Image 1 (cartoon, rainbow, N blue to C red):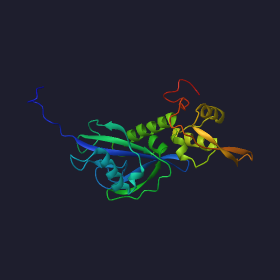
Image 2: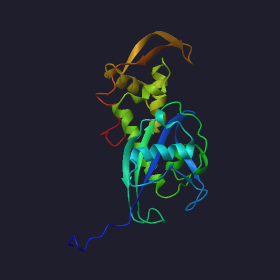
Image 3: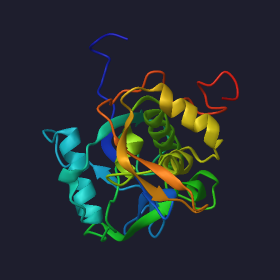
Image 4: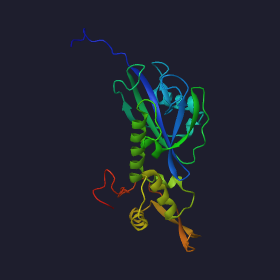
Length: 242
């Protein structure tokens, strides 16, 4: 095809946001109830179209999150998680969406903004299992975002942010179990944690455990990148049961 024969395709650019947190000991995702067609009344990720050609894509993501959930977007560190552009993913035409991910502790209950009929947290496992149906291809986007978050826990000290100022090894293990969606062997988990110098450090005190025996307290250490990584048992990068 020559330059003279080429014409710009009619493509709309949008953003979608996968916002994850831990609530009630489970990994949950922020969803909105769509207030407009298509899929009016269906659950979906917060998001929408860029307002104009000059709008920055990250700025559009922050704007859409604020408009649809009334959440303080400045507290969230968004990272690009993927681009989705399959033909037919949106009945309004050819729409390419840039997805952003944020995973953070202690996020508040959202309030539906002007562009949504409702907003709330939903358990990730209900989305991934298909128990909750989402509009467009948002289940796929959630699945990709959750996998990215699970990998972040393998390679970074992010899990400590979901614990209190001091915590036990069991508290830390519960964070990994909630995000990874699996049960972990306590002895293997403790061994992996101890392999990472600077991941956690002793807090110099103890807490009485459910068994009545004192449990050692720790706090987040200076290390932000884990080596060796906390590889998931039977995860994509795990060659065998850890």
